[in-house]
Image 1 (cartoon, one colour):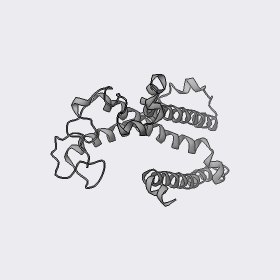
Image 2 (cartoon, helix red, strand yellow):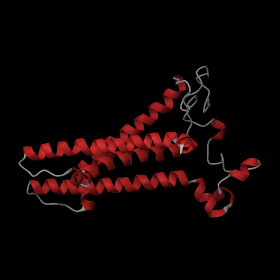
Image 3 (cartoon, rainbow, N blue to C red):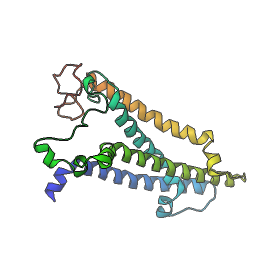
Image 4 (spheres, rainbow, N blue to C red):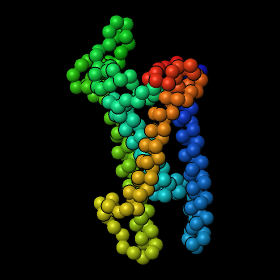
Length: 223
């Protein structure tokens, strides 16, 4: 168990933070929901009822889809685009899909994943599996967010005795895209900031930073 925790410490650490913040979000969101309900003389709900509600799903899925979009955009952009001196960029000579396309050789070939060695369609799929899975998570969370936001919109329409609308009609509403673009722009800003700041700034012993004495124009250098 200790070896498993050590070998997977980075994943387990962030997974624990994710679960903790989901629970925290549910608890404070539940209290905020009930406080607002009391102010409008409406019935309160239980924590579980809030946890499976459209209110909670919309807020969570809205954040998730923007995060997965960030990863998809970053993974694809770093194949072809270059930022001199950045830890987030390949060296200029390695740009394009050709890097890492050759089959492994020597001792690495014995330890290579099976799908990396068989060739054909399976190797082609495996060679793009990271972005495929991230893209799936993005599409799934975007769809979940759009459905829950649509349900919330119609619920508010009913509260005001206005007509409800269909899902496709809702996708053309500015309310939906305003919230969506607000999340997307923050992710793209974070990527641009990280790409340029790793040129000039350092964090000793971090895998996301060049060694402290490394020149600014050294690109893709690891500790």
